[in-house]
Amino acid sequence: MDALTSLKAAFDRLLKGEKVVQNGEIVWDDFFGRRAGISFLEDLEKKFSGVKINRDSRRRTLALFGAPEKRAAVRSAILGLVSQQQEQKIRAFPVDGRFIGVFMSADLVKLQQELGHENVWFDLTNHMLKVRGDKDAHKVAQLAVVHARSQRIAPRRRGEVECPVCFGEVTHPVTLKCGHSWCKACLTRYLVVSADTKVFPLTCLGNEATCSHAIPLATAQELLTTNEFESIIHASFLSYIQSRPSEFHYCPTPDCNQIYRTATPEKVIHCPSCLIRICPTCHTEYHDGAECVDKEAEDDKLFEEWKNAHDVKDCPSCKVPIERIAGCNHMACISCKTHICWACLATFTRSDEVYEHMRATHGGIGLGLD
Image 1 (cartoon, helix red, strand yellow):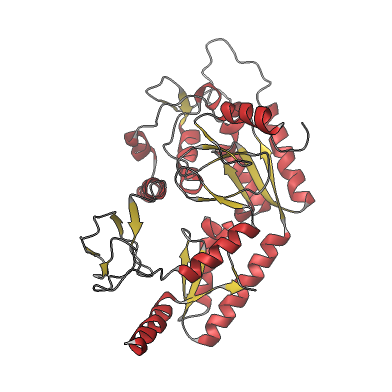
Image 2 (cartoon, one colour; image 1 turned 30 degrees about the vertical axis):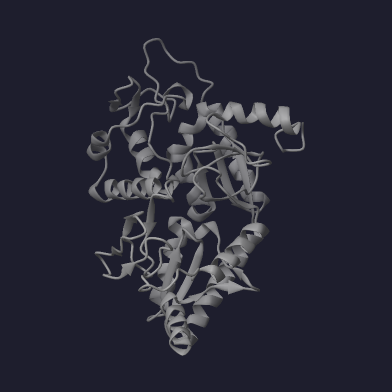
């Protein structure tokens, strides 16, 4: 029986692939969670035919399948890319609410074209423009923020309706139920970029990004192509699932994207896609009466070591891992939208409450300037 168990464990490792690990630590970069990173991995699969890369953004791991020599080449390429990415510093530029709309439009596209799509992104939850690169790249981004602020200087003419994104007179207007009008092109870009930002629900940016009215699904469907609409629906769905880790789980089979609800301990779950049976207690392949064991213990240990080394903490509310790269101790979980004090992990419903707490309890907001 012990020999059979050992063989089963070895077979499980084969099915899960070779984790990309270096010096005992899981290799991961947030780059692999964005479109440019996914494209990079897809290009590697094309270049090294027969190799499959399993990207698990939930556990922040990469697993390789295929011939050993090709896996080694792919691993080398991934390590090279990660080393290059981590040598460059990420800088976060705070953006006031009234200027957020600018970075949901052509300004962000221009920056991405100049610095690389993978090096520039907007963190809509924390109101920050984030740039990875050298001092020159950071300078370009800083000038873009200054330019965005300057767009607000021009006085509005009487009766002119102002777009919350470009700050200009609305062209080809789309008026939402809240009463705010947008340029059709600006609203379309805002919807499209949400597939990357993954901040849902999508709300109007009127009243200097304080309007909380949701953008109707019918409006998005009318403005977007079929592929664009399906992309944001998929991103919204994943955002909902990831913000409820105790309610939903992914099938444990590699490459199976099926999701199931938590079930009672006596109910065996059958995956309709890959047809395996799943244990409702430990969420691994059903083990026919044997006691539940932590089959992911080794991966979890590596993941915990990686988290400790990279200033990563779990959201106190939904348990999703959050990495702090730069800025003050105010963080906002992109999954459940909880506002968090990074120093003590106290949670709040509004951002202003966090700043009051940080100053009263910790003597400042964590920038060393207080």
